[in-house]
Image 1 (tube, one colour):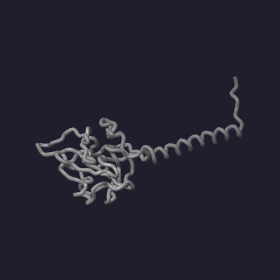
Image 2: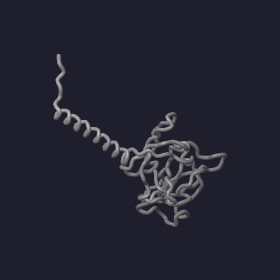
Image 3: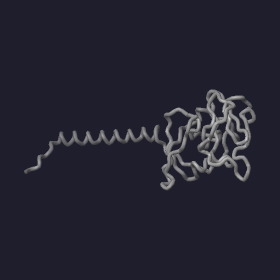
Image 4: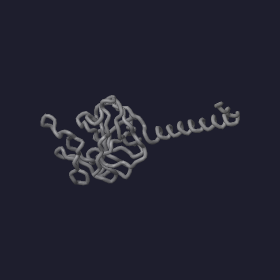
Length: 188
């Protein structure tokens, strides 16, 4: 049985069909990479044990920020930082006797494995008035802390972060392979 030869017009149509599919796949990959699943390297150990130096995480820019989300943002010095949101716009925030207080209510932090280190509170006492000279967060501000409170440079040192400085939310560690995991985030 002889193989039928395609005419030049059929070959051209096939070529352009394949070309359009490849171009569409590249465009889709670009959109996903640019807006949905953005790889970010972790620098430092301020989020340990949740995130460690050298981890690479997947971040997205589309969903709303909630309490205990891990966010990626640009600090005042231009550095890219990764921290956990503990207070939302319009809320009062404080820490007393190793307990997070939001609007005067105790909030459990299930992602923290320890509360004291050698008898010393894991998170020292503070309140928003001491740090930012305001009673509550403004409508465009979030209060962020690192999970490794003793080593973290966070809102306790640089104040609340602006919503516009948030690049996205971290969801998943994909490298190194032995450390692949979803990033725990629980809203109250």
